[in-house]
Image: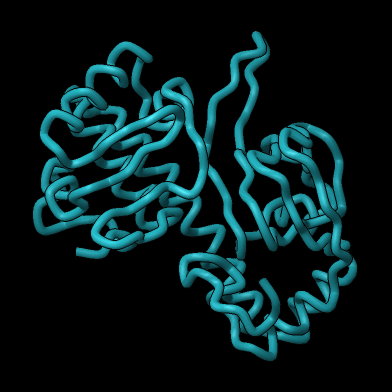
Length: 238
C-alpha cells in the first residue's frame, strides 16, 4: 500500500487526511522483516515507532513465569511502539512480533514528535488510537465476568472481524492466523472452553473453521449471540 491507498478506516493511516498521511509516511524508512521477527520487546527502551505497511503483528505481554498473554493484533495501516517513541522515560509495555512477513516504516522519536506538533490532526488521531486500545482492554476485563464461554468468544470474534476482518462475498475472514490458545488469552477462556465454544458456534452455522483460520459466516447472528442488546461497543457495525 502507499500514501494514496485505501487504508482500513479502523487504522491510524486510514483515519488521517491525505496530507498528514503522506507526511507521516515520508518521515519513515522502509524495512522488511520475516515472520516471527520481534519488532519490540517488553521492558526494553526504544525510540522508534513502526507503521505497518503490509502484514500483521501480534502484541503480547509475558509474566515473570514466562507465560504469554496475547493483547491484540495489528494490521496494515496500524502503528505500534508509539508510546515508547513519544515518551523517552517509558519502556516498552509489550512485545510485538511479526505474525506474517512484514513491510514497515520506522519513524524515529524526534521525527514523530515534530510531526505531532506540525500536524494537529495526527496528534488527535494518535490519541484516539491509544484510547481505542484502552477501551478494547477494558472490554476484555468486563467480558471476563461473563460465565458463558460461547458469549465471551462471540464478543471477541465480532470485534476481531470488525477491526481486522476482510469481507469476502457474504462472509468475513480474519486476516491473521490465531491458535485456540491465543483466542483463549484474549477472551479469558481455557483452551478446552475455547474448543467447545468454537464447536458450538460452528454447529450453529455462524462460523466455520480450519487450521488456525476462522471464517464468520453470519456476523449479524454472531453479534446477537454476543448479547450486547442495544448497547454494542462503538466499533461494532450492526
